[in-house]
Length: 228
Image (tube, rainbow, N blue to C red):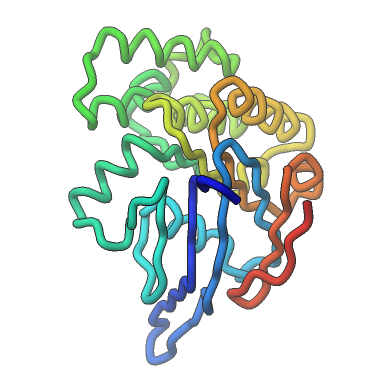
C-alpha cells in the first residue's frame, strides 16, 4: 500500500489488574490507506478498543510504534500528542462522552475552542454539522434531553468539527436500535465519501462489517485474518 494514512507495527499493551497483568495486545500490525474504511471485528476483550485508542493517540503502547502520515506518534510529547489528536483525529465513542452541562451546540464546538479556533466560523460549522445529522431543532438541548441516537449524532458532529483526516469509531451502533444504527452508519459513510476521511470502526455489527472495504478480525490481542 503506497502512502498509507496509518501504520501500526508490533503494538503491545498490558494493564495491571490488581496483582495480575492483563495482556490486551500482543504484537499487532496494521496498515490503513488514505480514505479507506476498515472494520475491526472480534469478541469482547479481543483488543479492538485498545487498538483504536493507540491508533488515535489516546493511549501509548508498551512496545511497538504508530505512524500517522509518516509521523511517529509514539515519540511525541504529551502536549504534542494532545494537539495531534485535536487537529487530525475524530473519535466517536460508544458511551458518547458528552459533557452533561453543555448543550448540543456547545458540545460540538468544544474541540475547536480547545484548538483556539475563531468562534463565529466555528459556531457556523457546528450548526451546519448538526443540521447534517438531523439535529437543527435540538441545538440547545442538554444530553439528558436527547435520545441515545441523538446523542450519538452529536458525538459524530463533534468528531468532525475540526475536519479530521482520520475518524475512529468504537461500536458506534452498539447502543442503538437497528433503524437508528443504519442511519448512523449511512451518515458516517456519506461524510467519509464527501471528505475522503479515513474511517476505522470497531464493531460487533455484521451490517457495519458488510459495508467496509476491509474487515480485520482480532482474537486474543492479535490480528487473525483480513478480508477485502
